[in-house]
Amino acid sequence: MLKNNTILFDGNVEEMISMCSPEIDVMETTRESLPQLSKKVTIIEEKRLNNDLIKVKFIKNDDRMENNINKEITLENAYVYLQKR
Image (cartoon, rainbow, N blue to C red; front, side):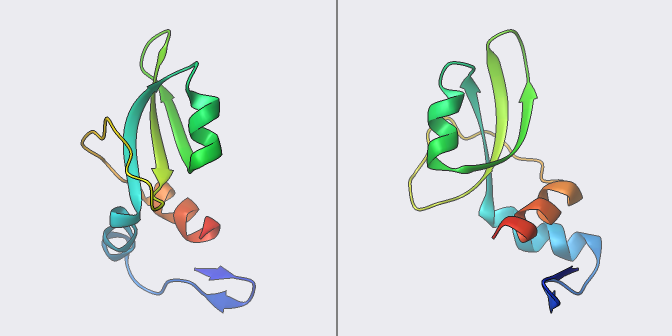
């Protein structure tokens, strides 16, 4: 995987997901609090769970976030993480 003529990653899918997984977190939030959350972290995926609840995957920062849930990091999430870091 390249970015600006620099190799970001050279390996297989499992290695890429494994490398990026510790840097990506998941939490559930409401529609109302999503704009505030997006000011604090880089959101890489949103999935609506019901009318008001949204599951969000984001790149970790130094702040501890509440409501962390089990995370299932995909190849797409890992790719986006590498592009945004």
